[in-house]
Image (cartoon, rainbow, N blue to C red):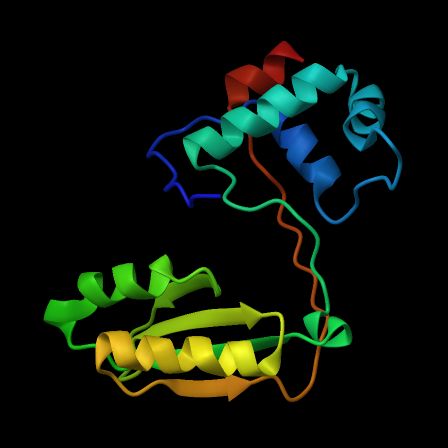
Length: 168
């Protein structure tokens, strides 16, 4: 799935906010989870799915899916960084983002100014993806494999338009 950028000023209404808060961290494990969530919120399954499609299209949502401990399935996640010369930053970002193994990347104010996560089905495929980044960019890749796992869940309240809140 492509990674759309959120459009400036995109409004999330109160029903969107309630849906997103309900889905954060807990999706029912049933045959029709969106119907069940919709019933809890006074929405039909079609409305839930349409709202999610619209939020993806607008770039409000960029990912929806489970978090998996990939190592238990034989895979590997690696946090990596590059020191990218500023004039090449956009070019290198496009190269890195084009690789299917790259989950996301972000800019940092640091000598290592581009950080990204590589995920692959095996450690060998992960290493190959990191080597490909180095070969395609001509830059040294600094890899920081996970040594220990921590679970930190951050739930921030979503603010909907005040006019939309009043209409509920």
